[in-house]
Length: 237
Image (cartoon, rainbow, N blue to C red; front, side, top):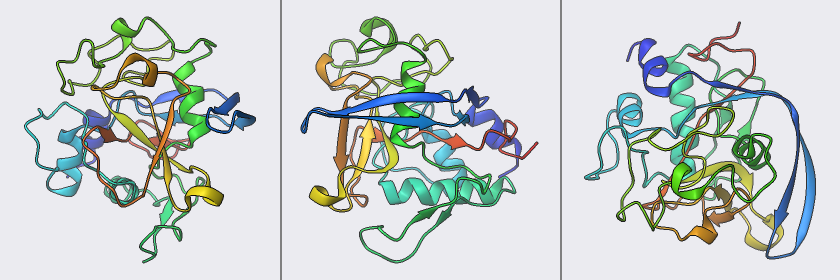
């Protein structure tokens, strides 16, 4: 794969400014504030087209090449990030061991390669300076149960948020880096955003779910984050 493939298939990475976000867990009724440094985020989730270009194949699906890739585990996602980083000539962010629960995966955010966003980065970017339950009217910004026909749709076909990010709500859920609550759920990782078959109450900026890092789910994909000092292909500037 040439270096032009990431540039074309990922889209121009969006500059996200530094700030802070208040996260909330509805189960425990707990709030916590997180400082978010500047970073870059892909304008839409990783597509089947990009995943196949990097990995050689994508999970079997009738969905088209410009739909978000699904049936991808958290482990699959971090391995993809490392492989894409090497393809682009970047230092991979992840050190990956052989723990079956992936608890030995370590992320070096300064490495310069592609990675998953943290949960705080994800919600901060999703909100794009807004404070409501969503960044716009649901039917305009998201593919969800009421308008999707029960299937995922091509990326970037709904209205983006104020920072130019598409599909942050609806279409597919997206893996984040974080453990959900290791004291209670062990290695389970967070995913965010709502999917094409979810009802409106699941399609909120604050909605958070969890799954084991080895599980593959038919409405769960991921989005790429990048060091702020890199160009559109991930190269440091």
